[in-house]
Image (tube, rainbow, N blue to C red; front, side, top):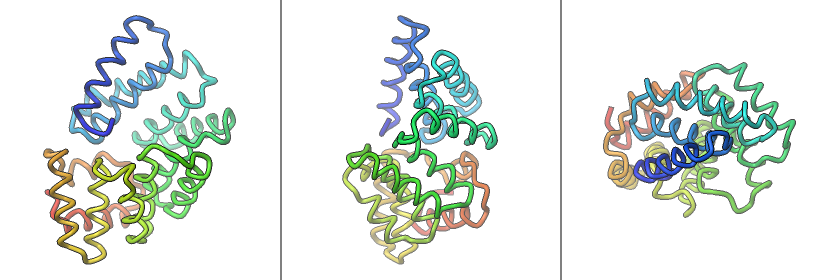
Length: 232
């Protein structure tokens, strides 16, 4: 899931797995994640990916409602559709099943941050890191995003330069954080590297794909992206 090509390859394998076993709940859940990331980050068509991602996530929960991973994945997709009450219910179900589910706490940070509570966003991702001290790189992405939303740009840079997440799509937030710190040469270099992996990125597409509830936080990101030289 770190690159568009990797995501498409994974999707092919997941669809093959579901073809072999249509009741394989985890495969439906992972396919939902793949489709969601496709339109959110890899410029795939939202009008086809979004409803299919939701359907696959709902199918996974229907097949195995007691799997905490299925519940939080449905929660994050619902949240990005601004169905916040339903999203909150899925995360509550997740933590009832497994209060120490590190991935769920890290992903909960994403929605809480975008909805305007970056303090809780930082708190949640710190909890995730305590629960999983050797996490996948996207935990640091969530940390960097929360710190950036909070206006703590140096902490965002520190998180996003962790080797686990550096050179991934999180690089755009790193570029923005460096720009906000006035380190424009570094920022523009990071933005150029980011665009090599995501050449069709636009600030407009990104802004409309994110469930921001706080216009001030949204504009903080937009300002940083523009300062770093990312395309409108």
